[in-house]
Length: 289
Figure 1 (tube, rainbow, N blue to C red):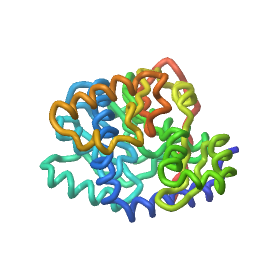
Figure 2 (figure 1 turned 45 degrees about the vertical axis):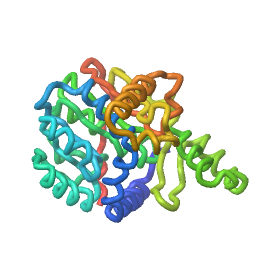
Figure 3 (figure 1 turned 90 degrees about the horizontal axis):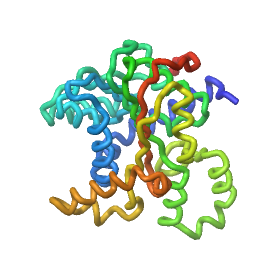
Figure 4 (figure 1 turned 90 degrees about the vertical axis):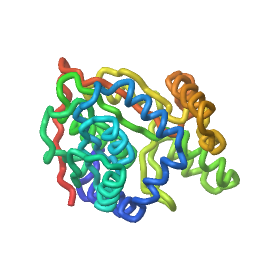
């Protein structure tokens, strides 16, 4: 059943408030989780056109990927819901000495301020796990697809349904006794109730991702587990430098593409090409204040 607009609006306000209060923490998150950042960049590097590609980063937060891709010569427009994220992105871009093509405050469910068929690639690496219904997730993907040129590439991030269970086991394994109903509901629906430290969220099963994206008009190019084999055990690996670090990035990128290991990662990155021969259902954006 589709979400009512007022529920979408409530979730939007909740997500916006969370990131407005945690912009610096979101920037620092990928310093703590270097493997996720490095493996994702490898996937981007392998599938983006040569610079200067026109890239739309939707839900790009404080601009970690947008700034790095700009540094590599791409023309990146950053879109995010939270004003604090965008303010931090502007400051970090200036500190890095790079220019973003645009910085736009908008909702992933309504990208009407951005031109159609204008981008070689769209990054949708945040919004989908904040959208609790399939209807909303479909709308966000179709909004992104509409901005792609024919043959353009989408990079869409998901959090796996196993991630919160690993987190529970690591932090408070005895809590399973009190949270049995939550765990059963999470496993059945993928929906995580809003709680301390995060917003309400949708956690995907790896098997559902490619069929879902293909139904929206994409040809699958790959699905990558962004932590490879070190999810939950990455602290020592992330402290490495030099050749040892580079070897671990290579290994995790290679193993992260093994279908048998997708559930071992917390974050999955779907890579797909816009299929010009398909006609997915028309997106009907909802403007959420």
